Image: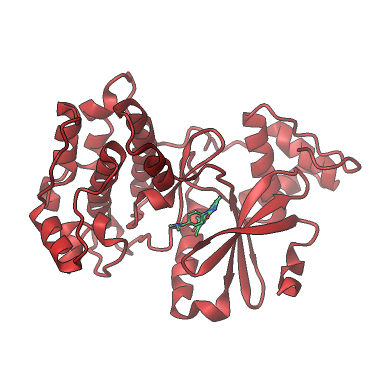
Length: 341
Ligand SMILES: CN(C)C[C@H]1CC[C@H](N2C(=O)NCc3cnc4ccc(-c5cc(Cl)c(O)c(Cl)c5)cc4c32)CC1
């Protein structure tokens, strides 16, 4: 009901529903101060039921993960029955549709996208997380053709670090690793590597390596790890697929080896970088001063609010100003003018 949206009043203008993600509705929003578009993921706690822990898990993961190819969480607003996640808007839609529209991608373009995905996955694994639902539907395009990984509802951060085995079978069957569907214990990051293999095949071929209308036949194909490579695949891409789609997880390529794989390096001099270069501990002075002047609060108070990682409106505004600055857009927040956009 519109009443529970009152909490957004003055911070965000709500527009149409742009999509659904499982148990959530995603609406387009405008950040009032900057006029920048955001995606607002809205969940009703009463409807979440036993999914509530998954949502909390996604929020903790999103708070922890800050990377150029992971959809950014700007702000979290929780009221009695609703949770609002203010997220980075990705106008380019799903990578899935991007591939379908083109049938399949040329190696060059597939490589640029795959390097971005590997960068995000290496970063997540380094932080002790596994995504566990890597697929083109969960990779969105921003307004500069960059991929953003979304939907961390299934991601796991086992208590004992990446060595502890996970049991829950989840994700989408066609992308699921053999050890995951045969109910064995599995390591999240090894299962993610398999999904990357299925993803790379989908990018280069435009269809899935393991597919069947009958789920148990599909499972057999995955467990046998047999797939056909179409004639247009290069030798190097076939070798990489072979290293990713190893049925035995211990024979599978690791994310560290992946960073310098010959196919990924073709045409590039640098290995895939996964550290977040922007994650310098120091904040951007110009943006801080803008906020401090706009709110009439001392700079130290603004810094405190951002560093506390409470994901408030002030920290959301700081993140948006930082992104505008990176794009060479204006960041002045005069209180009397209309939004910046
Ligand atoms: C597996 N699919 C069905 C999932 C759909 C979900 C809706 C998506 N979406 C649109 O429908 N329209 C445009 C659009 C634009 N910007 C978005 C930004 C963030 C998110 C987002 C981020 C996180 Cl972290 C998350 O958990 C969820 Cl659920 C959504 C969705 C956006 C979006 C497309 C993929």
